[in-house]
Image (cartoon, rainbow, N blue to C red; front, side, top):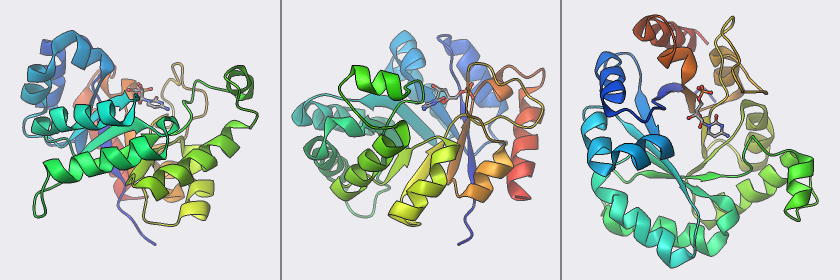
Length: 236
Ligand code: C5P
């Protein structure tokens, strides 16, 4: 199946003016922006609304609590109208199902409901880290287990590493929305990302969205960096 892989720029900063500057300059050169914990806690929800105006928003707050609390939190975030938002799959099927219900209630039929994405295993975790928290499985086994659980409980998609796209597509088919960080254009610094793929590789593997932060925001010209990635995706 051919799919268009779209680019999300991760605007990771605690500075409202920096985020606003990036958002303004990238307006025509990315498909969406991601605002996460750092920006949201430092600058607040009003700043999320202002900075994301005119952009599709990936609001990446990775909610994880009892089902009622997560569902209520998502309802409270609805006025920000994110295109994509995240919860932790390890919160379990009831938490995921109640999250989906909350979004469906907040966005009645005919309005554009945010896609509910589940985070499976953080890429900072390895097998030893999983064992420490009582999970006797490899990261890939656990990703598949939580990915299946999340999709069957009502998540629209998953955040995953590029190396997990193929096994997740094998297990779950073409429908789930796969959002993929850990992307590095050929020749750029890997920073602290360990298992990276280029935009073209991730597109060819079947990503719906790629998330790229520092290769854009730390580039000497962020607009040119974003354009080069968009061109790479268009020719993948
Ligand atoms: O700067 P860089 O491209 O590494 O940024 C990637 C973005 O994706 C960051 O906002 C990071 O928090 C996020 N992310 C990640 N790995 C995950 C989940 C999210 O790198 N597994």
